[in-house]
Length: 292
Image 1 (cartoon, one colour):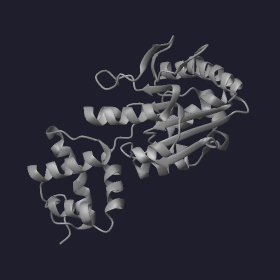
Image 2 (cartoon, helix red, strand yellow; image 1 turned 90 degrees about the horizontal axis):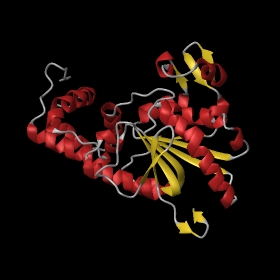
Image 3 (cartoon, rainbow, N blue to C red; image 1 turned 90 degrees about the vertical axis):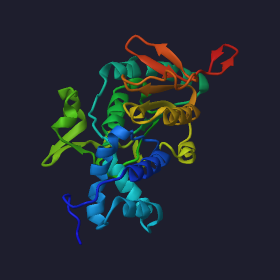
């Protein structure tokens, strides 16, 4: 029998707990009891596609099925929210370009380094890492530097979109026309990001709960993780923020969304009051002559 939305089984309370805990243990996203209907409706699509009779059967498929890893990726595609656009939260971006980058350039000069590594964690469809690339391209002081911008997300679907790099007008709601003209090429299906902006950007799949994979990324000078940890409970937030702290170089910066805070989550960061915004920073080690 092929299931339809009308005759698909409802999710029982016990089944909800099984799925909630499985998803939480996989990626840290927590569904409260109030979210049971939302979880049921989104996962119901997979029952129909896989021709499964009930949620208990689907749970067994996710836990023991031959294609369970790919299926969990499909679940992440269904459950994650991916609303973003270019040049989001302009005041924070201005703090990044006008205050953080000059500070990092000075620090790197003292170290004899001309490299900069930036991580866009939860990059969704790619607008954030490409925005960072555009802003860096405008920094003449970084000309000739080795720039690495790493965009990661748990959803394979949005990563494919980011790699394709073609956007419609909804992505440009906060973008000045000059950037569209300089860094995009208009074509039949939208606006394609130019190759010189794509070149320093690497798009990769990453579960922020996977500390081993995060360690492989190496140290970062700046981490953008904006409007992501709001979907985690307190314990998950602590785990992810601790991983960010470990990933940042001494004196590195963590940029969260304006609705997000490390209050009651971590005391490992200093909240810096810049002219344009407030930014979290990993304290540097004290040495003779200052901080590194």
